[in-house]
Amino acid sequence: MTTTTQPVQPTQPPDLAQGQQDIDGGSAAPSRPPYTVGHRGIRRIAGPLVLADGMRGVGFGEIVEVRMTDGTVREGQVLELDEDRAVVQVFGATSGMSRPGTTLLTRGRESVTGVGLDYLGRVLDGSGRPRDGRSEPLPTAYRPVNGLPLNPVARAYPDEFIETGISALDGLCTLVRGQKLPIFSGAGLPANALATRLAAQARVLGDEEEVVVVFAAMGVTRREAMTFQAELTAGAAGSRTVLVLNLAEDPTIERLLTPRIALTLAEYLAFELGRQVLAILTDMTAYCDSLREISAARDEMPGRRGYPGYMYTDLANIYERAGRLHDAPGSLTQVLILSMPDDDITHPIPDLTGYITEGQIVLSRDLDRRGIQPPIDVLPSLSRLMNAGIGAGRTRADHRALADQLYAVYARGREVRQLMSIVGEHGLPEADRRVLAFADAFETTFLGQGDRRRSIIETLDLGWELLAPFPAHELTRLSPELLAAHHHDP
Image 1 (cartoon, one colour):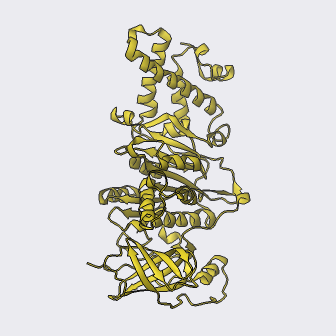
Image 2 (cartoon, one colour):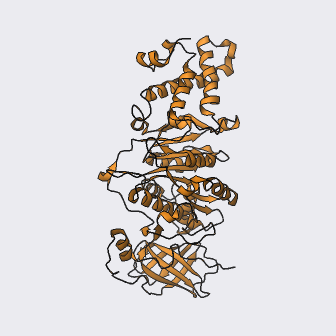
Image 3 (cartoon, helix red, strand yellow):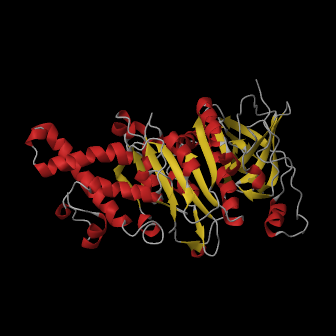
């Protein structure tokens, strides 16, 4: 059965001139009408792609309207141009579309979406339409979904600590305001539960204003979407959250639009309204699989494991929209979740993501099996901006040194655990048994905090408690001053 889909934007979105008028606050009349009539012939339909003739004068990335004989209207975007031929990506299903009965109507503008405070507390679909059964949000302005590139000179270096309430992150892999930090998960691991927890608990120290959350889910099941909606819209937190949900049953092409819609909303709140915004995108693997599917439909030469060669550039266009600006109060921080196929961290998706982002958080299947929640494996995890976001005035002066010592002892404990499987615990010297006991306690208490929220001070104090059984001469990463202030020999 053919269904009718509405345009991506609210009814009668402005053209480019009107969009610039909204940005500048001017009153100049548009230089051209929002719709430029021009019927084009369809040569071929391949999945979500339409190959059309007679497209001379149409621009790359331009939005077109796809009309069928039964009155169904869908939007599309020009992906490729060759003289007067163009490949158009249709935002929606192409079922029921026929070559003779379909025409294209050019609009003369790029894809835009409505933005504004009215979107807070709302649940949208992957194209920016309401999914919560309420009326269309009232946009304050319209902005391009691909964003506006930030001048690198205008970027401020991220150096302000974000407290998540999770000891493994706050103590050892600190999240910083304006950072982009991915979570590498695997099938069945509780990455989504960790994402909702971050959305509910994140706050900027010293800032009384609550963090605004823009949560985008791609290719999720209805059950997952209902869970996100129930947990993120309940209570007071719901009034500072925007959900953009793309379901697995929704058109594949919509999955490519979902993170761009979400980040456009986030950019407006952060850079124009001065809010502290946390954008959570899950699951980037579903996004990349859609990118591969569209690439195959376009008969493009595949790259690694069938993904298009331009996937690195495409992901960078999404990830690099995070950041801070000089002399601006707002910030946009990204937490990206991706599922590693077969738990392979060398897979192209986590591999390319690691090149672009500033660190990674890795979830452990072994910790999850043992009931340690959240199951964050801190040894392969890191935050490259941690040093800039911690220390005196932000957390505590002993933060860096304590984190280094916890890392060192825990890494040694993991090695001793493997050795114990060979020689047995009774064959270990006393120092190794002490390290082994630390590793067990570290996993069950420091990492396995359950649903409890810890402040950064509680996290650091717990770290010192775990190091208390060690004599001072074994804690080689700590200075004598720190040992005198925080440690006493057993």
